[in-house]
Length: 281
Image (cartoon, rainbow, N blue to C red):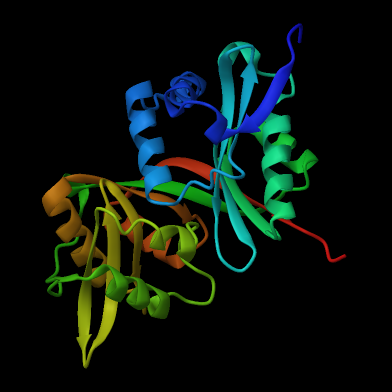
C-alpha cells in the first residue's frame, strides 16, 4: 500500500464516514445504504451495544476504508460483529489488522472468549479468522418467515404479550443447556429499546414458549419441549403485524431449526459461528 493505513478507535471518526465505508463494503450482499447504516450505528451506540472502546476503523488519508464493530458481554465474553473493507482495498491485510486490533483491545480489558459469524461460502474470511486463532464452532442458518408460507393447519394455543424482562427470563428457563440461538443472552438483552415479546402460557405462571422481536428480526423464539404448535402460534402472532420476518442465525443442527422449517420457515442463507478462547496464563 502506497499510503499508510491507520487503525483507530471508532469514536475518533464520524459515524457517517463509517456508514459510507460499511455500505460500500457490503454492497455486493445487497445490504443497507449509507443512511441506514448510520441510523443503525447511532442506535447501537445510544443503546450501549456497540463497544466504542474496542470497535475500530481503518483510515487511509482522510478516508475510512473499513471497520470492525464489537459488542462486549458479561463474564469475559465478547462478540465481533460486522467487519467490512471497501472493495478497492481488499486483499491487502486491512481486515486482519482490524480484527487483530479489536481482539487485542478486548483481551487487554479482560475478555477471554470471542465469537463471530461468517458466511458459509466465504472461505477467504474463514481462513483469515483461523489465522488469528478462531475455530469453527457450529453451522448456522438464516431463516425467513412469511405469513403466506406458514403451513400449520391444526388448532394453535393462544398467545399473549410479555414484558421484556419477563420474556428474557422465560427464554432463559426454556432454553436447553445448549442455546437454540447463536445470539448470546447478553446481546439479546441489550435490544430492550423498541423490542416486543409474546408467549404461550402453560398455566401457573410458567411458559410453554416465548418469542422476542425487534423490527423485523426475531431475536429468539423457543418452545420447550419443542412443540410445533407453540412455535407456529408464536410465528403466526409475529407475522400478523409484520407479514415477513427473519430469524437470524439459528444453529442448523438443532431440532428446533428443523421444526421451524417444517411449519413453513425458509432457509435464506448459511453461516458459521467461529470462536476464539484466550489460553490460560
